[in-house]
Amino acid sequence: MKEIKGFSKLSKKAKLEWLIDAYFDGDQSILPRLQSYWHIESDIQKLHDEFIENTITNYFLPLGIAPNFKINDSVYCIPMAIEESSVVAAAAKSAAFWKDRGGFKANVISSTKVGHVHFTWSGDGNQLESWFNQHSDIFIEGTNQLTANMRSRGGGIKKISILNKTHLESDYYQLEAEFDTVDAMGANFINSCLEEFSKILELGLQSTPEQGKLDIIMCILSNYTPNCIVKVEVSCPVEELNVDPTITPHEFAEKFIRAINIANIEPYRATTHNKGIMNGIDAVVLATGNDFRAVEACAHTYASRSGQYKSLTNAEVSANGIFRFWIELPIAVGTVGGLTQLHPLVKFCHRLLNNPNAEDLMMIIASAGLAQNFGAIRSLVTTGIQKGHMKMHLLNILNQLEATEQEKKAIQTHFENKVVTHQAVVDLFCEIRNVNNIEKLNK
Ligand code: MEV
Image (cartoon, rainbow, N blue to C red; front, side, top):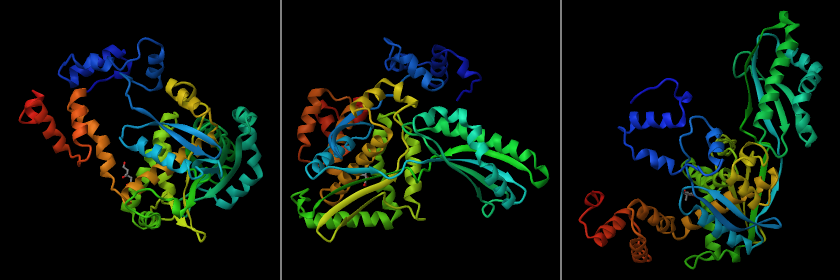
């Protein structure tokens, strides 16, 4: 494997030439393949090139639509960007099921974001705190210019405090700040304020060097936002849980609740359970141009807040025979700034969702997560997951084999009432092509 200095300085063409030479033995078929994903006939490619560094082409994911999501008083077609088969189908199926049973009832409980100046202070903690309490105004005043725009939109700094963490790490303190970033995800805003706070802290404590030494370690927002919480619930009388002819509504409710209890007591199951929820959440976060890594990291920290990693969803049958199923989690997303005004497909997705504000989007995303989890548990406790999954996966296998449309149709018909396995598909495919094995096929 070859190394290079100054790769970022090369033109796109030169980058590609070098890559093909160094990593693909000069295989000239690579270039047209990568170029076929360029968006050359408009200025969209330039836009994409400038989103990140060293762009060589675009990476496509399918964008699917899950219709019929009744959330509070609106019905949405939810856009989902995801590569995994069955996810969009499961979301759509759950949405249709719950639309006829009152839909998703969603509300945002809180929307506070948080960030920290992490620093060490060698002096007395009480003296530091009393200095801060006397001077907290200078932090607000010193960031007035930075916060003006956000304040004009109804947001800004909500609270700042000093936290003593010396019981965890010697001399370690935090300046913790809470923010309302309204419809922006707000990462740049928060980080800029924090960096300004650190300068104000340094300047302020300079005048008291005899009392201690200050060392700023770092200034950064936290992607853990336990006070930026959305809750979504579906409910119906148990009798209306007629999901599958093989199971009574009461048995289904019992098994469903048992499945969630298992996720609450067993981290092996909780991880997969929450992964399924994130199938729905990430796909909408991605389609709406938000940072899915931040949302993922936050969700998993929240799922561990009790000290054990648990389910993000809950279910119960209440005393009056009503089945309730809900999700409550932090989701920090924005509907202004970032990619939202830049990426043409992100703009399309926002328009499809009727240009939601950040709180609307939190409710839409959480509903997709809840729907996904309902779909997964419904399959798991009834037919099993593989039946639906492998049918969808069949198409992926056939595409991998480069089957023709005619071959696809014949093979899909064959597997209509049969178990799909990779080997069975390959065998039938070879039979249709009249070859003995797949190696021969590839030649
Ligand atoms: C697959 O991507 C997700 C599921 O495994 C989720 C679950 O098991 O709950 C089906």
